[in-house]
Length: 234
Image (cartoon, rainbow, N blue to C red):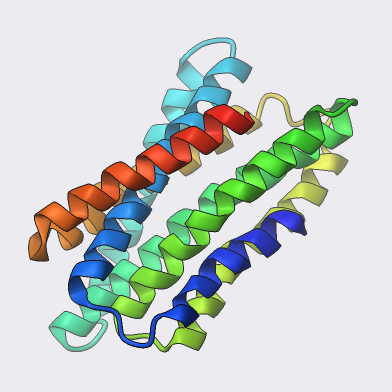
């Protein structure tokens, strides 16, 4: 529950902005992309490669995650989501929520597996590290949704909802700790692939189209913050 609560705190950042300037939103969208890129490697791909006997399973998971987002993108295009701009904005919002939620599922499982299969302080440090990483991730969902025209309440709701899967996945991880070793690398890399697909196809192009310098500044800052959290907290 701690990891979800920190996600909710991050999503609550949206309440501190009455009206956000477009340049600031571009900065935060770039920040979210940077957070997700760093998390894709240090929180997902690197552990998947360490757990796996080789590169094959993480590579398959990464490709499957990216392909899944491409299929979701194509399916949303076929749904005719209304007037052109609203349709694009809504699709981008759905893909963002989907990618971050997928990212949180294996993280929750990783915490559950750690508590169910190992002892000592390690699992507690893992939960603390992932929880602190979730703060910028919550903001990375709620602030772009606010930009797309959602109310602050709805932006917060979807931002915190992206993290509610972690305690659920954690329980599953505890129950399946003895049998999850061969599956977890695929799930971790699947989430990484889905996040990279959303970043490259939606977040970066949108943020850079209006203000490239702010978007790149946010990207670098977000990557740096998540890198420090991942490396310093393990």
